[in-house]
Length: 148
Image 1 (cartoon, rainbow, N blue to C red):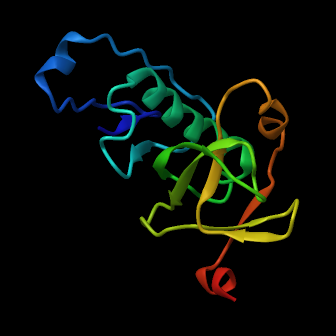
Image 2 (cartoon, rainbow, N blue to C red):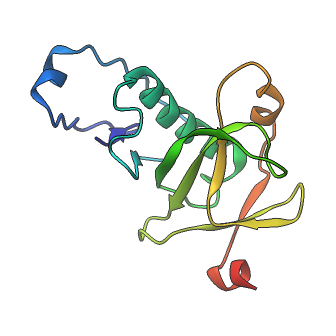
């Protein structure tokens, strides 16, 4: 189910039991991300609080890291929280960003001069605070620059 984060117009509920559950949402003022979804609708299906918080974090981090400024308007989360090994060894989900034309976005990470087609969205938990303080680390590049 898509979670509309800005300019909220509607919420789609796909199951009858969802009608009887309380859904708490909060508006993210500074994020142009209008829709955040899961690539696999079953991700965190049995953990709705984690599921919702991950999508909220996806939208929040897009404003912090520079994806919003680069033109991201929608985002898709893939997989659950996991930890990397050498690159980004902290707990994160993976997010793919799309522009207003629904084209996938590619990024250059200034801090380590790497190129990314998906970004690691840090989990909001103790130990990840420094990552959330990194502002504007990503800038948009073309697909050709990413593949070079």
